[in-house]
Length: 254
Image 1 (spheres, rainbow, N blue to C red):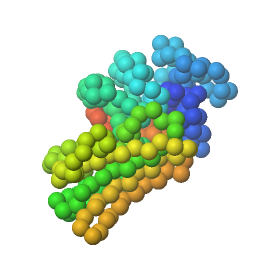
Image 2 (cartoon, rainbow, N blue to C red; image 1 turned 120 degrees about the horizontal axis):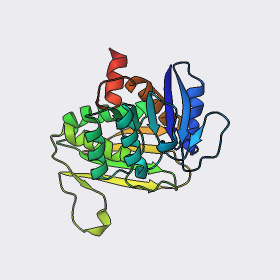
Image 3 (cartoon, helix red, strand yellow; image 1 turned 135 degrees about the vertical axis):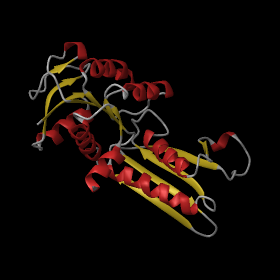
């Protein structure tokens, strides 16, 4: 039985994760971290890692980029696995995460959905066949409360495409600021914010007289919670290193 701590435990995703864990028999939530430490009647909640007395196998972080320093410091000090599912990190913070992975097991991905990670794999296969002849655009849609744009998932998809294409693409976010035709090596990334859209991502391959679109839609945030819990069970007790959904998928396939 893996013991888990949730950061952002009183937030929406924290509550969904706790609900997902309650239906499993391979893990349990032993505590939560949240600036709002209002008791939930299920497990103790603390304002900071300094107050945490329970010893988990992994910490699932679905909170805010500002928590990263204290999260990594706690996990490194106590040799505990970290599952980082928050988005909106700076390049410097991403470097911090990579550096921490030399000391502890870190599971880091911009999207915990199995379907989205499969979408990234399909996009990599498609660009190897279509990339030279098709223009590629990514369109992402999210709810009106999401702060960062483009989404971390859109950037993850763009990076997967660019990796498969040998790094030839230049990301373009703001077409209205310039007036010229689309360059061949552009990879456009557009964001829409509105209503209660959980998350939708389209990868559009536009060629001569034909268009191919790869799409993923999340109907609820539970898909991300399920992925995060699977990641926590997977990464607990592993050797230090940087893990992502592809590693979890590969182990399940084998």
